[in-house]
Image (tube, rainbow, N blue to C red; front, top):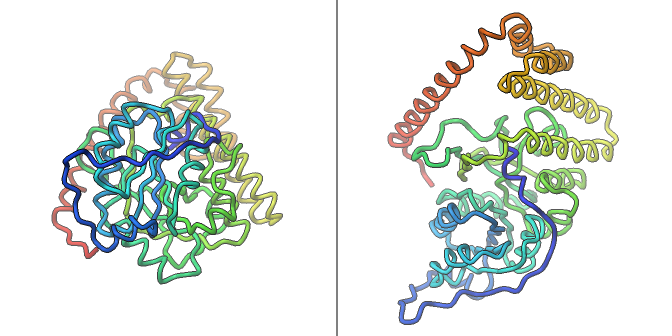
Amino acid sequence: MADRYLAGRGRARGAAVMARPQSGAPIPALDADQDAVARGQPAFSILCSAYRCEAYLADTIDSVVGQTLADWELIIVDNGPSDAIAAIVDRYRDDPRIRLIRQQNSGLIGGMATAVDASTGQYLVPLDSDDMLTPAFCRRMAEVLDSRSEIDVLSCDARVFRDGEEHDLANSFLRKRLGLEHRLTLADMIGEHDVIPYFAVFRRDAWLAAGGYAPGTDLVEDIALYLRLIVSGHDVRVLPERLTRYRLRGDSASRDPSGVEAFESACERVYSGAALESGDPAILSVLAERIRGFRYEQALRRARWAFVNGDVAGARRASRAAFSQRRTMRGAVVLVGVSVAPGALRVIRPLKHRVSRGASRVVARVAALADRHTVRER
């Protein structure tokens, strides 16, 4: 999931621009929740730093407008600025809950800082400009947070979908299903089953106490924030319900070897800092195992990339390095394949991709059928 982390980042301020109603256009009546927002009292401040997202931003905004709980404000920081992004936001000029701030590119961290400064809500919700909320997101998260005052941060699961495909995939975004009664620990964050905090609601005081997205945490600003919150004793939980939609983009930077390894290096840095600050031998042990996992996956990727580029000797070296980190069946198969029968791997690899694509299509169809025949109370 390294692709979402690879935009330039930093910190700056911008001047807010409130979209004006189109001349002569009817302004819809506000319900009670919307009226509260118009008076500057929303429950949710949904924060979006927009940069080179013209193809996706309207979907993201529509997902917010479609919330069954209307007690929100949406603050979009045009972090470019881009006339195309401004034009997209201008389509929603009749909705006073949506605000646009235009500024020079200050990176994701700077864009989010500007959005937080302009926000007024009780709960802060960072939302990537290519992802979406399901209609029940605000209502369901409010039900939990309003009734559980001890919870400082609440994240949720996501429906995963491929860019350009109609149906969501069936797989969960979370690697490990954690119940609401489980308070997250450093071991949860650092371990192999890590909980990646892309979709979360923060109480404003918790966000401010932890410093929000901190300068110097580029690529992993949200992970670093979670780690600081947990180390400082804040209560962080996961609601295991798919209340968001995560887009797998075709231009994903996770296809780029240097991008993936930069993300993993940043993770290793913030994980190490949190583990050392805790001083807990058990957490340090979890960290050591996670670092071995990073080295193992990096070596396997290098073996694959070397093999694809025709460098069989390089693939052998990398596969041996992977096997030295973890003696797994997967690593053994790769090592034997590139060492003994590289020609056979060249035949198997395209077949594997064809089978994988076919399986993905089947998974998408099954997910669509399940949704059609399942009734959910929200």
